Image (cartoon, rainbow, N blue to C red; front, side, top):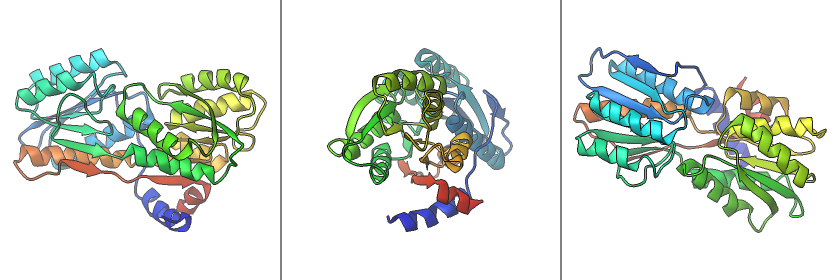
Length: 312
């Protein structure tokens, strides 16, 4: 897709999707659909997943189906316990956004063995074949980020990559996409996890900038780490967006503001609200015995300053 066409598409999509807030656990009472949905989400301490949960809750209220959203707090053991509790509560469909793709496999298989349909959202499940996957192709998305960044840099420049939570499919796939686009085309001096966390993004970047003060860009697997990196850059005496370019991923409100302020080069819109909505719509189809898709892809869009200003 050409840059000009992408910006037109971006403008249209930004007008449709936004970011909201939701409680750490919530239940929408059934009104019309005879069945229950359990949603185990990796964390609600991240705007990306907050908006996903909000989309699910709003759609459940609209369709009149009961949904129980539980927050794993990025703890694999808690997520396993949460899923077992949801199974025992009599749910018909489990929606799962794994903390760790491999660690959640046994609990998901237990749900399927109990006759419960399973939908995974944003991250895949290893060790169990779920009924439906909803999410982006994070390898392709990572490649798009890397290819766009290269248009701003030269082959002699050095960059740092901030990775997501180890073991999560989104982190693995985005990183592979970054490498596919960047390796051999630019000097990657460091790649390190900051666990999708803003505070860790700050700390990790502080340390990496001391070891590599001449880097020209930081590629982050999510917005929260990118925002932490921006803080670290500015605290170091350099200027984020001028001396060092930073890219994000998720298109949260804080990230979009950073893009319009010029401290973040661009972020990636994954339409997280839509993911939550589609998860509930698919779950209702399952409950009602209707047809449903086994794979529902979600497109991504790069949002830079021009695109966001055009959407205002």
